[in-house]
Length: 457
Ligand code: EPU
Image 1 (spheres, rainbow, N blue to C red):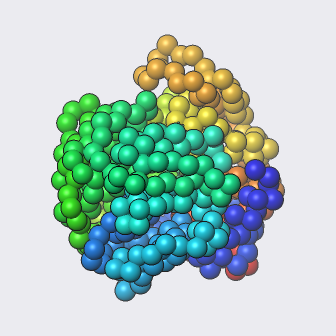
Image 2 (tube, rainbow, N blue to C red; image 1 turned 30 degrees about the vertical axis):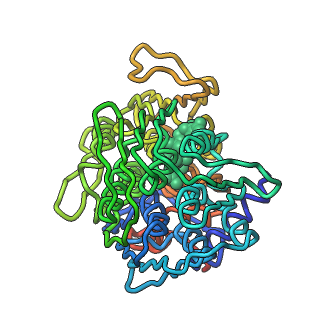
């Protein structure tokens, strides 16, 4: 994918949430202090919106963040005849009574910016007997194949044809419960199975499923809709298909990736950030690493306060993993803070094969980071090595200085913001629209936290 296409995605993403400029100029070196709120998780709200397509009555989703990925899914749903209405701040009413086939050009234009369209497969097969999935977007952090999704859909009885437009699925004999085992507990493919199995005939058994908190929240939503889903130990989920589902009323789980990102911003800039809406339970693994890295936190009923502890920042060894491990989305912001720790930190990325691209900019700003493209052996590894994994070795502390940088992907982009805020001097960051895919009102939040920046929007 060319950098031109990335720029195009960035400005389209930004425009969806009203961002006028794709560039921010940051004067770094000042701690971020204050309180911001996080709302519903990008990686739940977007899927919950797709689930509404399965119902025969309207659903209400609360705490929906104002991010561009929500805009993409809204556009997709509307293209299929679902009426999506904002009934209050952060509250959407999704009415699927008039679902109809969409024009391919309409969904194709939207799909390029997100991974979510793939999750429309099961619901569309149930509702319309056909699903046409264009080429998918999302962050360019690896190959991001969809083989688990397609294999699972075939197991339900779908016929998958590749056409020049994308992938066309049909189910002439309907969809039937299946026994499915994933080679790896993929988040998206688990959601695919859930959204398909709930209305398939018979029982589905899914082995090696992902069990991220967002998946548990999606299961809660499906249960509210009338689905029958239960879990057994060792990542096995059973779904007993039902004839019909009704709408839900649900408050989305908070965005733990956004919360962890602001926590890392507090750590890197020696700031003090109260993240309203953050909860301990879903952040436990992050909080342990945060504490080991020299961070401190106070847990309250309505949020968590993050700041540096008294002993300075310390190096850590981290391996990203599926839940309940350390999320891959947490490593990028944390690495900025680790550039300020005294000693050598190791971050093993085991989920995606290309998620250290953002470190180029940090190195340009003065960080000492070595990326090992084939990963690194370590005797203290917790998870077995995966093929294609990578490692970053961060040696600190290194003062950072301002630079002109370009956001490569969502989480990498947020880490660039933190790096620029940590650095002495001025940085110009372009392509910031990408950040709006997953960080609600991030420019307003920077202002609330006292960041020194110029954004012409
Ligand atoms: N994989 C396959 N085949 C498949 C599906 C996945 O090989 O058919 C591989 C992927 O290539 C990757 C690994 O399995 O190496 C994990 O992918 P997974 O399917 O779990 O991820 P995803 O569903 O595409 C979601 C989030 C990501 C988050 C991951 C891991 C959404 C929309 N995206 O992606 O979030 O990093 O789970 O938790 O929910 C982000 O928010 O910035 C983001 C990238």
